[in-house]
Length: 319
Image (cartoon, rainbow, N blue to C red; front, side, top):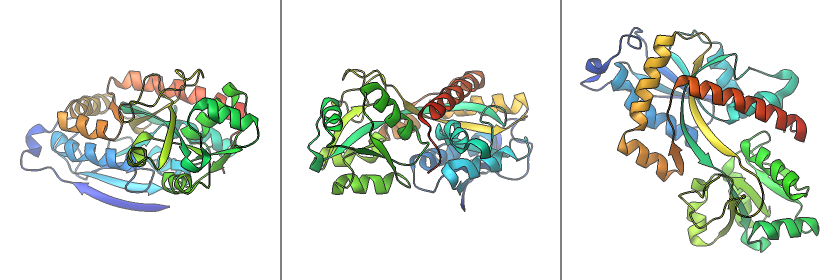
């Protein structure tokens, strides 16, 4: 496990924007990111933290507590006092990982947290190495059935990409084996080198390679095409009824006061409406979301149930 911190200060006008429900504490608010610095989740957390600090009249610290598919940071927040001083910013791996851990389930994504707001959604994309010669989903399926393509890469067992890979297997009637990497960077490196024929990632991490023609986009997993790669068809367009998207959201520990939850939700909705924030997010391929805490709670509950069912069905376990 690694832990790093970066603080965002109030600025001159900070106190003027403070809300009573959020400005009661004397120490900094900590937003825990359960993944290493530099990834999409970490970058998003820092975008929000920088703008949240002056709005609540308190310093905001982004703290990386990475390890075990995000469960170390999530467990840390679940055990924190429900005073609004310790929050978790997480992707939807948060709702999958406990089911993958099975008997050692470290937390309950529904019962152990207070959902605050969904901040964005992101498509997933199937990429093929140039060496594979694959150009479409039809190619992938035909080559898989012929025994010429036997595996796919994911950033880790139990990731949304892993679930997407198994859904594609079932829908297409094929049986590609997962090759689980420790993150996106080594997976992309092996795609470029032709070590693995296909792999599932997010569009932002491969956009430059797509433009350079060094890696081949096959299909995106959202219902609509992804803005970063508008020429790439969806799985549904290509004849496969598969839809999986990543999402990101802010949580507190179970038992947070409703006034604090609503105040944070209000401030985060305002931040998500800022033109510069929307531009940064869209540039990463992430569509800003927002909405109420109740809406996010309903999403987390539904996603936990869905992914729990799929993890059991596909016998996905921590790798």
